[in-house]
Length: 363
Image (cartoon, rainbow, N blue to C red; front, side, top):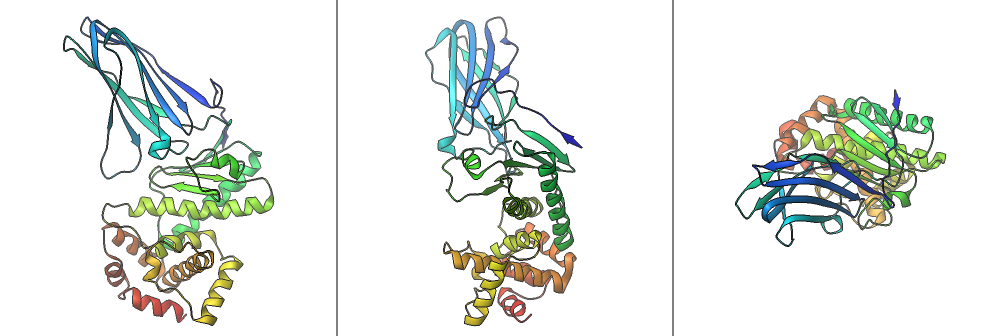
């Protein structure tokens, strides 16, 4: 079922205004009469407050927390600068150019505390800002735990992407037993330039990005068939990272890169020709990268990066084909407990990374 919705743009240049109605009082003197929020995506969020008292207001503080996966709940407290008076209008700006920005679809919970000269203090009820990219009129499609948002292209365009998304989830579950544990949202931008406009200081080559802690993927996909094919593979890849993050999230250790990227590559389907050729060259020249080296971030050199992804695909495919889905899911659960790389492999498969290095290449 397809549900379409248009966000009402209230001000120019994607400036969204959220009004929080009602008056909060402390006893008979101190009042918060107005609170509003302006979102200038992706640059800033401005929090506004109006407060009155029969004596001077002396302290205003904003409390906020970004809703995302975390090992501990963290609430930020901002001291608002103003001149003490009986009636105060003040604001505080969250400059996301300094904090690194938020993805479209992120939620921020906030509330105020206000104190006056008489020592009276009030705390407003918490409210939630749903941060959206107001430059575009988004349409929405939902299936299962996946919400797909897009603004360019007809319903069939979105349906094709949703089918690819569901197929990727099915492949991942068949390969590893890993499934979504909480909802995810996809934001399909109409072009790479539109996507870059949603990011703070992006790399010029960025075509898509996953925000695992938020359960959000943002990707630029055009309307041509080649762009659509690329987009479907990229969604499959990035979606796998979100699922694996949910399944293995822990405060102790990260997955080795070869496992994380290998699962994402196998979720795309068959390897593309560039990766096949990279493996052939490495075999002919005996220049394979060791499994142990593939635990670390991949090389910045293009040919080495392609080989690293190709090897990761083959290593994970070897484990799945030889030992099956159940063992792979057991490996993921072992990593979730914070196990070391060699320790996890030995516990589940009976060999370490050096032995795995020989085994996958012998197939």
